[in-house]
Amino acid sequence: MAHGTAVVSKVLSKEELCLLEKVAEPCGIVIFGASGDLAHRKLIPSLFQLAKDGVLPRDYYVLGVARTALTDEAFRGKVEEDLRNQADTGLKADFIKRCVYLSGDYGDPKLYQSLDGRLSALDEAHGIHDRHLYYLSTPPQLYEAIAGHLGQAGLAKPRAQGWIRIVIEKPFGRDLASAEALNRSLHEVFREDQIYRIDHYLGKETVQNILMFRFANAVYEPLWNQKYIDHVQITAAETVGVEHRAGYYDQSGALRDMFQNHLFQLLSLVAMEPPSSMEADAMRDEKTKVLHSLRPIGPDEYSRLAVRAQYASGGLNGDPQPAYRSEEGVRPGSTTETFAALRVEVDNWRWRGVPFYLRSGKRLAKRVTEVVVQFKPVPTSVFKPLMADQLTPNILRFRIQPDEGISFGFEAKHPGPKLCLSSVTMNFNYQDAFGVGQPEAYARLFQDVMLGDQTLFSRNDWLNQSWSFLNPLLDYWAEEKQTGLAFYPAGSWGPREADELLTQEDRTWLTK
Ligand code: BG6
Picture 1: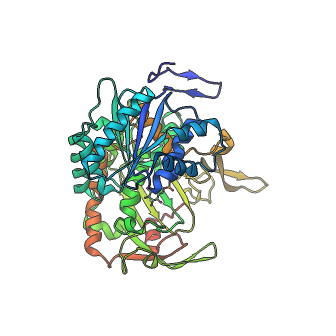
Picture 2: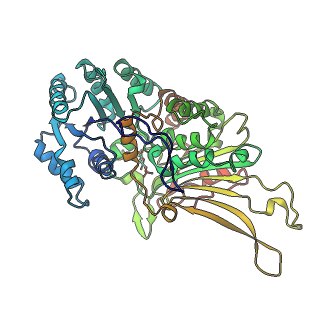
Picture 3: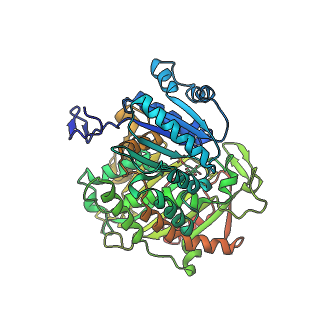
């Protein structure tokens, strides 16, 4: 198979239909921030997973860049440590051998001169022709400087038949102005088609499957609108607290950390129109339109439609848990929200009048991410005296994680001489259906960058739109500080106010 070329629809077996199988061209992978947590916990193991899956290019190298002075050998020792759970095979030894290291100060032009020299030597040794992937997994305040230096050193412009791509980790800005400024700086050096803004939720199989479910099946799409859908709920609940990330999180909060990116991506996938194709821009056009259609929320509506809260002390699975304000690194009296809930409406022909309820929080009762679609009740009941609104409505549940799957709830007759109705579920479970676990989201995303496929990455206009929608609320909360911040016990399902967001409209949260 030729490298970088597509093989048209290929039937692998009766059950499996694969599209566009591509193989990436040989390239150099440069990880800035190579001594950091993300690199060792996610990036290196994901790359090795790709090596095991046989989808890395024929030739490649991994060049770690960071401030810490390390030799290639010492870096390889760390990589070996990252892969300690993997069997010692020839493949693993080969992967480790391909890892090399360069240290320097990100603000010093000398680092980029050394990088240039190192890349040329590595390219030559590996027979790679100017194809470089830069992964920025450094603190975000360094993104602009690194991109600028890469530009000045002539390392951002693709040469001859090569390519240069840059991957930016979240957070991408902390508000609209900073996101726009970062975009401007990146665009001074890189074209939009070279920029890959990561949202690891898009790398999750279950998130991508929302598209397959909607557009590869004929049954649900005709029902996918305000005529048949009552409302949609999106929950991303975590049991972990702020962990060791207070320095970042206390300046950020749930709205920036989870809504602006992950939850809005889920919302976009659920609400978007069918794209003209799976091409990156066709997809991203439709997702951006969803955000353009969000009905703006006015300040007089915030207290009714938006909730923010912080965890107080509590308990999880019998273990006492400290309050957020007592966690290490959190500012005393911090008003950062560790939980947020929002009611939004997508004001277009398809969705007019259908509420989308979004919530996410840390230190909640359970780790679960779900999209729940509740259908409207039947128009009238033939089972009188039971009335239509007494029948449990149909519920479609995308179980993003854990227990990955999709289920559909419907009413059935309970066996027996009496006419009794019961709610039952049809269930699809990934593990049972495919017998494999969920691959690491980062692996898929790495692969796509190498293939030059931006479908699963945020485009600048989507991102700006998402910030534009949330920015007024963030400003309002910043001004409001203490007032309006609710508290919830660690290990609970969040504050009462989040429940009221639904109960005021005779609904309840369906993810528990
Ligand atoms: C990250 C957030 O983007 O997503 C974290 O910064 C959060 O605060 C994490 O914990 C959740 O990801 P996942 O894949 O565990 O749902």
